[in-house]
Image (cartoon, rainbow, N blue to C red; front, side):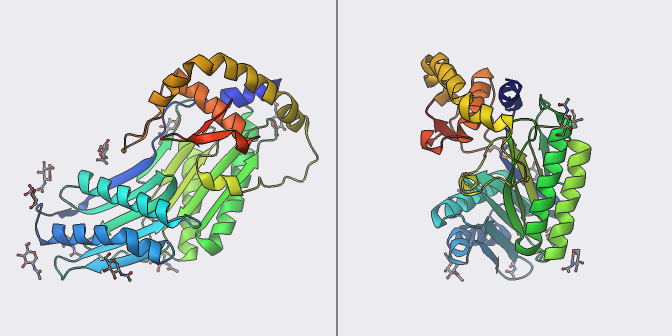
Length: 328
Ligand SMILES: *[C@@H]1O[C@H](CO)[C@@H](O)[C@H](O)[C@H]1NC(C)=O
Ligand SMILES: *[C@@H]1O[C@H](CO)[C@@H](O)[C@H](O)[C@H]1NC(C)=O
Ligand SMILES: *[C@@H]1O[C@H](CO)[C@@H](O)[C@H](O)[C@H]1NC(C)=O
Ligand SMILES: *[C@@H]1O[C@H](CO)[C@@H](O)[C@H](O)[C@H]1NC(C)=O
Ligand SMILES: *[C@@H]1O[C@H](CO)[C@@H](O)[C@H](O)[C@H]1NC(C)=O
Ligand SMILES: *[C@@H]1O[C@H](CO)[C@@H](O)[C@H](O)[C@H]1NC(C)=O
Ligand SMILES: *[C@@H]1O[C@H](CO)[C@@H](O)[C@H](O)[C@H]1NC(C)=O
Ligand SMILES: *[C@@H]1O[C@H](CO)[C@@H](O)[C@H](O)[C@H]1NC(C)=O
Ligand SMILES: *[C@@H]1O[C@H](CO)[C@@H](O)[C@H](O)[C@H]1NC(C)=O
């Protein structure tokens, strides 16, 4: 039963910030509606179609110096055109809404997929941006074997950074030794930086993790040139197509518990939560901005979501604003 308890403890979420947009003041300010601003708007409006038409990565500049703006748009590999375009559109809209007069802005956004939009009046392509834009961790520690979590996390990251050293991107899943839970992670570099600089940036994120977020059940660390996120639940659709990394061991008791015991407990939990289902909907509505989750109902919802996704993708009913809704 220990494994089972761990699963439900481990997914107690407090707050999830899914977008990291930053308006830089270091490059100065423009006057709203001036030529630079119009160039910026024109450039941002052209990004969605150009990014999707160019395999998920596009850089462009609009206007003449000194009012020229340099843009960049990117979606993680494997994103369908529609999701990519939607993500770039909402990211651009956020930047326009938030960065009213800053000459430089950047947004890594999680919106069904992961995308990046960036603009500036200087050409930044190929130069490594290492400022920490945002690092987030959950206020609650994992109620599990911490050694196990750290070993699993490090092993997963080493593998992902290695893969990213040839693709600028990797996503993976790794099972905790002492529980049936998995750690899920995506690492991505802005594709304008070299693969060497990509590796360096991601390694710095791992070092940052050790100082800011060690033992936390999930988090995001983003810089202009790279992004990592990890969770104990599958936070993007793309995990559906990824098999957990093999650790070379035979089936553990944890797996047996997972197959035999968990569905039974889920049934019981499902029954208990049945009448409260309507309440879940209110908690999972996407406001279009930062998507935050809070409240004990959400904890339980997440617990169910994470647990069911380990077993039955067929239990999927549809998508809520934040994640997926499962039949329990
Ligand atoms: C960007 O704009 C700021 C503010 O107008 C200006 O001070 C700076 O020189 C510009 N940088 C470039 C590279 O044009
Ligand atoms: C910028 O122009 C638009 C459309 O012409 C206008 O609606 C808006 O009020 C202007 N904003 C500023 C700050 O002048
Ligand atoms: C740059 O923008 C300023 C203010 O909008 C404008 O006066 C100037 O003519 C523009 N320069 C060019 C080369 O477009
Ligand atoms: C980029 O988008 C603009 C406007 O949507 C379009 O006119 C232009 O042809 C596109 N360029 C490329 C290379 O796709
Ligand atoms: C961007 O705007 C949203 C609301 O639209 C706000 O919650 C968020 O804090 C803003 N972020 C920044 C960096 O200004
Ligand atoms: C930028 O805009 C903010 C409000 O949107 C304003 O308070 C600030 O003074 C502006 N800065 C400059 C340099 O225009
Ligand atoms: C890595 O980034 C640094 C800093 O932006 C840059 O000077 C260097 O040329 C980059 N290295 C490669 C191989 O692109
Ligand atoms: C925690 O996990 C590690 C690595 O899997 C294992 O060696 C250790 O015995 C576990 N400790 C406890 C208290 O379960
Ligand atoms: C992460 O959690 C630790 C432990 O509570 C806290 O001290 C630290 O400030 C947090 N870091 C960030 C970036 O939120």
